[in-house]
Length: 307
Image 1 (cartoon, rainbow, N blue to C red):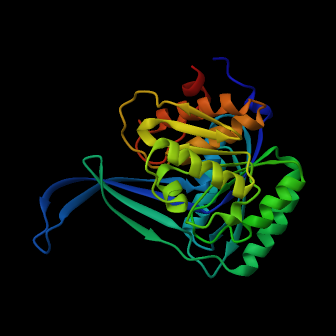
Image 2: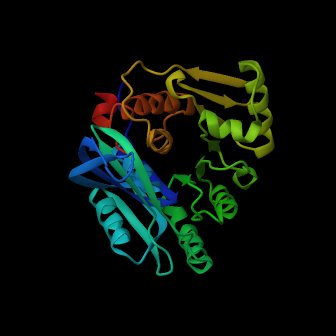
Image 3: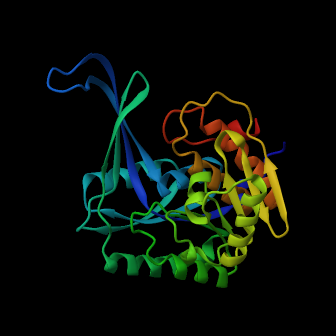
């Protein structure tokens, strides 16, 4: 497949950013203090996570990418800003001294996750209000808006953001969180995984029942499409009167963390480059399949995707 001209794609990513830290070590014994493994740390690594991982995936595909979010006035926030910029993302972080930059610390032993430790604080209303003003100012310089909701409080004004973006003629993609999606009404495309969809529409009895529930949800939210990611079963795109299923490409699954970020980043970048929705979904499916072969949050490059 010929690679689309993503150099002309302009993507604005807004949402909850976080710093993903990995401590890699060796496990050779159980602690005498408690029935837990003792991990001797040999190396550590920090990567952009959450919406910052979405942005770096867009940039890796060649899209001109701007990232708008909130961090704390702390070393983690400064590090996240620096490593995001190094990966080609134009960073616009608002600093809130009252919060700690969200961090997920994963302790790895024998290349398996032993424990994850989270640090987070919701941002203040004052910072969120100023972020909305910056969002409005950023709209003219983008083609597609990706709203990455991790439920950390950074998208309090998401309904207004969707309305402003649609009024400006921009496509809006949302990676959802929680069981109340009314705040996403009017977005062009929503990209839940199977479990996130079940939290909203309930447990379905068959594929036909699932399709009925999705169609009803899509109409209620007044969105163009719902793209449901199904892990090893691929993904299904639901549009008006149509469902297109794309099977997963057969690969050895290593780590699914961050796969949803890669999918929505690829989908948004392809749409911003002028690719039709159905083809963009097929490309995003391939990108997700490549990502799960990598450890932790990771990017899929244009070369990996198109050869």
